[in-house]
Length: 467
Image (cartoon, rainbow, N blue to C red; front, side, top):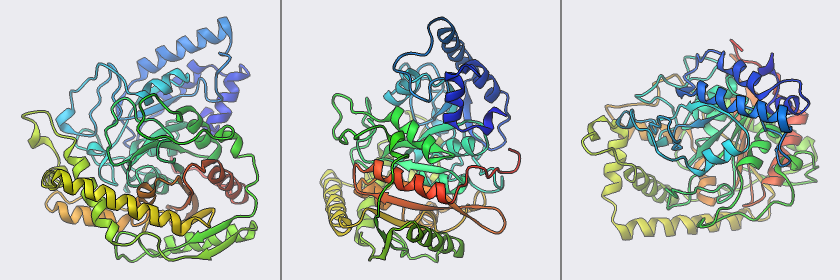
């Protein structure tokens, strides 16, 4: 079946004339969404795009600058405004919003020759680490559809893991790519701050959030990063150009690396599930067997940073208001967090950002001698739908989210690239990710070692039920 092929294999089949972009879109459009992957399908628009690409292929051949994913379908997270397509931001308050213009990520994906099959599911404004919006069914992991796909890129992850898309972009402000990657058994890559432009909206003044990639293999994740990466005029910060393509980095040996590891939670006192511990220990042994030096280090970010992160998170929530007269349609968690954010003064917000940057600088200095850092991705395997959400007590909801994700936000604070790799499964078949992070702007090294790990302990042939 076409969906058994990796995204790069599908792109290569298009290049060789073995399959057309239209055939790929028709194949994926015919698959049934049983995992809450999409909020708004756009099959007709994807078919129109694919017909145009197929006609271009027949008349003129592939464009000279076409990348390896040209002709491969994808989806767009429902946080990205898309011209003429309902974009809800995961909120019932925007259930009828249709933007007039697309943001840069959408235009970049379209220009790369990747038809979008729809807007992928996300929680309200991308805030929670689970995907249970009021505008769509919950996004669930295909490994056990009673359990969460994670969030906020839960729809994108569910789609890729269930074979509804070959690869998909996501976004990540505190773990929102890596959390669903762990829940769904995928590679989830959050790149360096500034690697992917946030034009034209620049909606995050803190620098925590970035777009990134979700895929079944490291090479697919790298290929999509090649599509998305790039500086735009006006970007407030950016990463230096890589030495080559990110895909090529997957074929380079990383050399002998110094690997720092820690497992003590960064943002909460929680009990770490034995499966997360086992995944971390197994990954440590695997890295050592590959010739790397693995060393225990203290947690590089102090607990005091948590309050500053939460201040910034609440203000970011307050920056996403409902349309006038529709405030009552916001979820209780959003209203609670937004209320906290509106109570923060301008100077206090500025000071929280300053302190967060100082914590980041200290962490980067503490880790400077190490090439990569290893932690678990999550404290537990994917939990049951509804286990974290608590509309009656939003404070408890937020606390449960922190306990579920006590490491991921550290690398949003530092701006380091980080990837979750599906290296472990529980005895009852649930995926458990481990996380590697690298120095800022060193995605090439991160992808090189991630590809080395994948080659040593491959996972791409695992298939969830219903595949």
